[in-house]
Structure formats: C-alpha cells, structure tokens
Image (cartoon, rainbow, N blue to C red):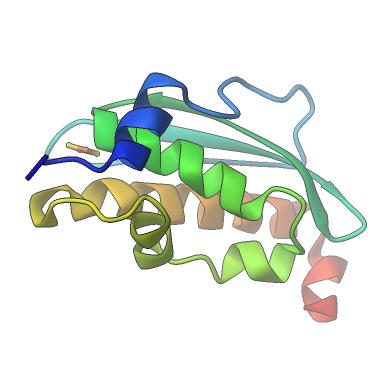
Length: 130
Ligand code: FES
C-alpha cells in the first residue's frame, strides 16, 4: 500500500492557495520545534467570511499538503467554521496521513487558529458575534 494517498500527493505537487496576502486581516505562524517546519497563514476576512486565504510552508510534503487542504476547507466559510477546523478533519480530507505525520496536520490547524486570533485581536467586536 502506498504510504501517502493520491490526495496527499496531489496537494503536495499542486498546492492550492500558496502565497501571501498584502494587508491581511489575520496572520498566523507556527513551527514544530522537533522537525523545524514552519507554516504561515494569511486571511482576508469580509463580513465574517474567509474571503481569501494563502499560505507559506517551509516544511515536509505532508505539511504542504495539509496547508493546501486546510486552506481549501476554510475558503468561503464563516470564521466560526474556520475556528472549528481540526487537524483530524484536514487529515481525513486528505484520505489520511501516516500516524507519524499527523503532527504536520496539527500545524495547519494551529496556524489557522493563530491567524484567527490575530484577526480577533484587531477586531475584538467580531468575537461577540461568534
Ligand atoms: Fe514536521 Fe511534517 S515533518 S510538519
């Protein structure tokens, strides 16, 4: 059996939403001290909706695939849904990750949450609406 699903390979080879957003409404950066991988997420938020999302990932193939899938999962969704995204949902959407690669999907969840926290810190009034 292949170690990585076709979806993982697809999102690794053709990652969606790579890049940065100028004047982003929220930016989140996380790293894993053990492997040294770093992920940065940029959010554009309009009316409580994730209007655009981009990522930069300096990391392994699973981290790149996880970032790509995570951005696809939250794009166009309400902020509350993005906040509820779990690394398990990202891994499931990729048709699974090997156990020892699950931490790569955790980076994606944490980077999105950090970016949303950054957004809320600039727009505290929005948090009440959630
Ligand atoms: Fe560290 Fe994948 S090995 S994020």
